[in-house]
Image (cartoon, rainbow, N blue to C red; front, side):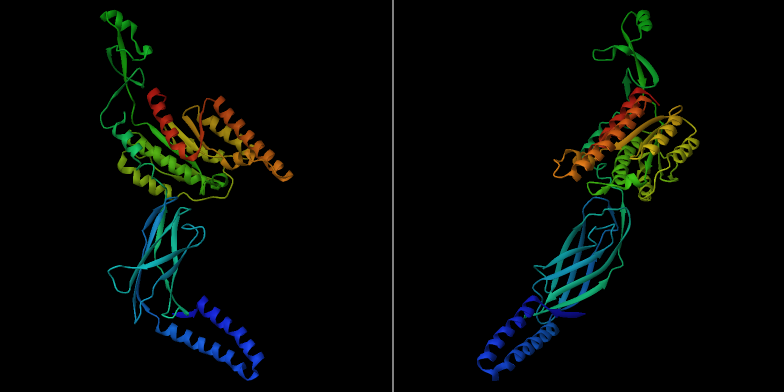
Length: 440
C-alpha cells in the first residue's frame, strides 16, 4: 500500500511559493512563511494518507471464456473500513493483448446504496485475438478525507480468459427461426424437381418445376406425374481455413481468419443439423488442424473448441502441400469450402494448380472476404502524389485478385466474395443450393 499527492495538494504547495515571494520582497523577515506553508501541506498530506480508508476485500469477477469481437463485462467489488469511507474509488486492470489492444481497462467504482463501505463497478472489454488471455495486476486508488493524498493498492490477479471463436450468429433469432422451419430438419421432406435420390412419382401440381415431369409415366397413367426427389444426407463437408500471413490482416478490427472462422462455424452448424459429416482443416506453411468428420448438432461445441486452436501464422501459405494433403485424406467425394486470401501472383498460380487437382473428384467452393481497406484507398480523393501512388497500387492489387477469381470461375469453381457480415449468410445459401441440386 502506498500514497502520493493529489492535484489539489500539488496546486496548494505551488500556490504558496509566489505568495511567500511577494511577502519576502515586502518584509524580508517573512521569507520563512513559504517554507512553513509547504511543510504544513506535506504534514497534512501524510496525515490524510494515513487516516484514509483501508481496502479490506477486493474481488474481481471475470468470465472463464469470451468470444472474440464480442463485448465482455468485467466486474470489480471492494469493501473499505475506516473512520471515513472514500467518496469514489478508481481502478485500473492490466490485460494482455488478446483481451485489449490498449493493454489495460479502467474502472470507476460507486458506493452501493444499501452497503456501508462497499463499492462496485464494471468495465467492458472486447477481445481481439483467440487464445488464453491473462489478467494482470489490479490497481485501486482513492482519496483521503482532505483530498490531498491518493491511497493506492495493487493486487496480482490469477484469472485467465479463454478467447474462443465468435458464434453469435448461430444464436441469432434469424438462424434459429430458419432452423425451426428448415427444409433439413428432423422430418424428411421432399424437394420436387430437385435433389439427387429419386423418391416417388406424384401428381403434378401448379408451381412445380416442369423439368420434373415424367412424360412416360404420365402417358401410362393418363395424368400428369412429376418425380419427387429426396435430398441426400451424410455428405462430407470440409472447411479449409488458410491461417497464413494474408489471413492475419485485420478487417474492422479483427483478423480475417477470425471472420472466416465465424462464417465457417455458422455454416457448420447448419451442415451438422442437415445430417452431413463436417470437418475443419487449417493450413499455413504446412497443414496444421485436421479434425475427423463429425455429425450431429451435439458435436458443434467440439468444432468450436477445435477452431479455437487455429493459430495466427505470419508466414506465406503453401497451397500445394496443404491441398495435396487434404486430397490424400479424402476417400470419397466431398464439398471443400476454402477460406483464403492472396496478394502474391505466384502464390495464386500455385493455388490454382493445386485446386485443379481437387476439382476432378471433389466439389470446391471458394470464400474470399472483401478488402475494404483497398476499396477505401481507391475511393479516397487524393491530396498528394503519395495518395495517387497508393491508389494506383491498391487498384493493381484488386485487379490481380479479380483476375484470379475469374480464372477460378472459368475452372467451374463457385466463388463467394463479400463483406464479412454477409459472408456467412451467402455461404449458407450456397450450401443449401448445392444440396438441392444434388451436386454432391
